[in-house]
Length: 211
Image (tube, rainbow, N blue to C red; front, top):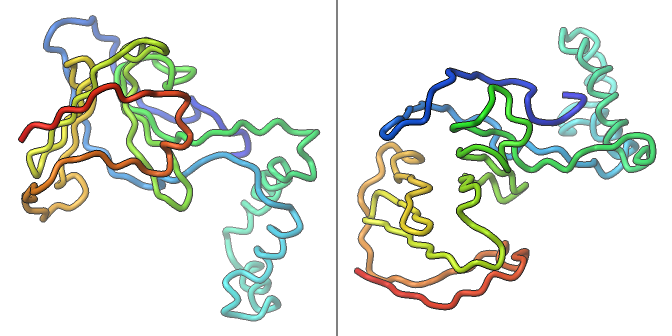
């Protein structure tokens, strides 16, 4: 899309009154979980790469195949997007930095303006070459400067995360690998990935492991 942002495409049901026990289930087929909006390196470099492609054929042959392809009708739109996101034209176009590309859950309106700050749902967060992540929006469940209880439970197949004893995220190995078998847990501990360095001041005050 030329102008990135939330609310471009979606499906909404309801509205439904909030009641105890109200739930819904969704079967979602993942597609481009690393989709994100950001600036390209340079328009010159992008056009050069577009011209030579994977370098498995000569540029002239590639250009000739493009002329015969019905996909060429989208080329002008693609070029326009590259121009808008190129650093050479940054003073003319404001490109939002969006690393999230999909939201699903309960929201106060049919088209939420920002699913990251409203409603309760799951978010797909792009991490570039590190693939995508599943986030959960806990709303005001986590606040700056307030101590919270974070509990994670894993039985070798099912993974559940609780914030202040409220379940906020559930995953199973079979969500990713349909033929997955239950894992054997031999050790329990804490492992921090590269995102820990982007943290804004969280402090781990206590850690308890139970088997």
